[in-house]
Structure formats: structure tokens, C-alpha cells
Image (tube, rainbow, N blue to C red):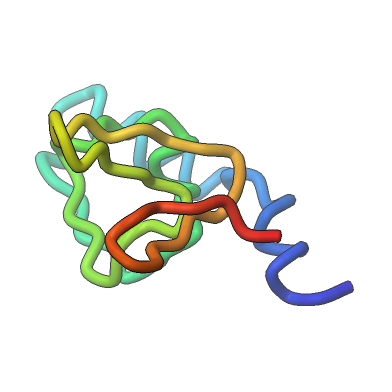
Length: 86
């Protein structure tokens, strides 16, 4: 199976869920991640409490209102437009 398909099917691990719990408890104040798999967001960590250094391949931003949307597919940008791969 290609690596992109494996990443698309990945689910948050117990470690992701523990970090989300620590954030909800106020023990961890902010998460800095270099992962692009979106698993921290899927584990329930609010976007405003995360810094994703290399971006998130599942996060789409509206160019008009700047709202962010978490997708269940990888998003790409071409010519200033976000498109669904495939």
C-alpha cells in the first residue's frame, strides 16, 4: 500500500489522546508539532492550541474568509486554488 494511503487511514494513537487529555486538563498549554498527518487535530486538540510547523495536509483555508476546515482527504494548492487530489 502506498505511504499516502497509509497516512490517510491513520488514526490518533494513545499518545495523541494522552496529549489531548493533558491539554484539556491545562497541564499542557500549547503543542508544537512538525507532523503533517493531522492526527493531533483528530485527537481533539483545538487548532488554536497547536503550531504545526510544516502545515497539515488535511487542513483547508478559505481564501475569502480565512476559515479553516479539516478534511478527510489530502488538500493541495494549485494556482491559488485548493483542490482535492485524484
